[in-house]
Amino acid sequence: MQNIFSMILPKGEIHLYCVSLNPSNVFFEKCKSALSEKEQERISYFKFPSVQKNFIMSQGALRLLLSDYLNIDAPKINIGKHSKGKPFAMDDTELCFNISNSGANVVFAFSRAGEVGIDIEKIRTLPDLDQLIEKNFSEKEKKFISKNPTEKEKRFFKFWTVKEAYLKAIGEGMRLSPDNLEFTFENNKYELDAIKGVFEQEDWSFTDFSIAADYAGTIVYKDKQTKISEIKFIN
Ligand SMILES: CC(C)(COP(=O)(O)OP(=O)(O)OC[C@H]1O[C@@H](n2cnc3c(N)ncnc32)[C@H](O)[C@@H]1OP(=O)(O)O)[C@@H](O)C(=O)NCCC(=O)NCCS
Image (cartoon, rainbow, N blue to C red; front, side, top):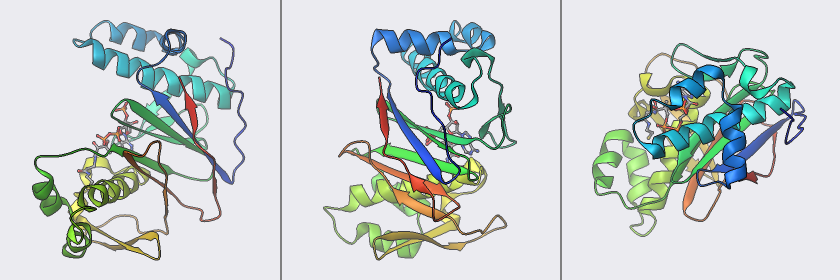
């Protein structure tokens, strides 16, 4: 299969991509044929067509992008999983990546400068917003999120992506409950203030990005000097 993006990733950069879950037929077929033999087999077992389509798009696009960076045929790329579920490229473990999907979009971050975490959330009305705030945030965070009623939903989703992207950068996922983390937002910057429990406490940088006005997004990485590329939209 021919590479479609031909990308080189310098060490000091993070590349971001956004793929629509409602793609053109051509791109859908490209993603489908990028799947590995096992994944091709797996898609016939999905019960719901929408779940099948989302899998084809996120896994297929991931393989196409990895194929460009690694110069290996997309279906032949070996994707492994760390103990708590974070996927990685077995063919080149220095090429770190992370994925997130929400609404009709999936985003990808690639880095050669250490682990990376990415999270997006479509900003939407949640009937259990107050319970979610209560359950997942510290007193200080709750105060900040709820201070301005018109900003509440937006701040909630923004803080949510900050926590989630951090948990994904360190690869912990669900192991760590988000109310164990406390972030502050000062001088237009998010910072990790406190962690309860035992886990990595290195310096991480948090950068805001957005794929559309009704989306919140955060990318988390280690080296402050890293240049985050402008997001590329593919469909
Ligand atoms: C794994 C987890 C991080 C995924 O989050 P999500 O919002 O459901 O889904 P996203 O689309 O953002 O991310 C999914 C992708 O993350 C990646 N992922 C899976 N486990 C991961 C882990 N431990 N670390 C990093 N990335 C992981 C996978 O690529 C996955 O894609 P896939 O399902 O197609 O394989 C999630 O299950 C989790 O543990 N969340 C944290 C707990 C929480 O309650 N957070 C609230 C914040 S206030």
